[in-house]
Length: 256
Image (cartoon, rainbow, N blue to C red):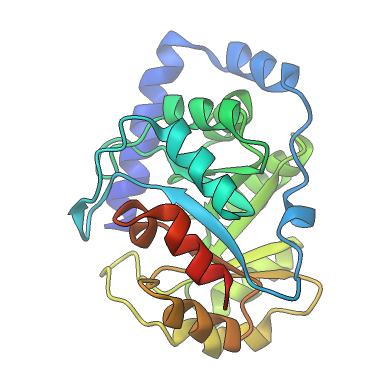
């Protein structure tokens, strides 16, 4: 599944590139105002922080919410206390787009994450051109040379990479990059199975100077508390927010 998602995302980017060449997107990326410092926004604090996700669908759950106005949803997330907004921009299975990200960026003042299957420098430039402050890099999807190259580009553009891992080896690869923001995803992107205890098993491998993000398997405040107790500085939440009253849910989650 992960290979399929990555290949599809790169193929879609190549189609966009035919209409908007690399040089045009690069110029747009460089013309953007400086990215917001996401590491400061997500730095460890007395209480857990939340990255709230604009997410219409997923391969494992199908359609979750229509979300006609992603900007309005993002505004409610910011009002509810989210420290950053994640926007799914993958179109085939998650029904997202770069237009969603652009709308969200124009409506909120907190950092915005482009959450997609990134494997080509063009996609990183697209992210900055659309206003992203963070870009997701999935260790399992990339060989180390490509991961290093993309991570370097993210930094050169002034953004922050959320480097996502699923195993001890992948955490070590993320740390070898010098990643300042490391996520552990409870969902295996090959099988889509969930293991909520994976974060706890890997958290001690992530040093205190690195922001630790727990991803997936969050349905309730108890799930947030579970991750917080295991050492999460930040929890990324999508489905639980788009299928409920987001402000009320964020209030409950942030009380942990």
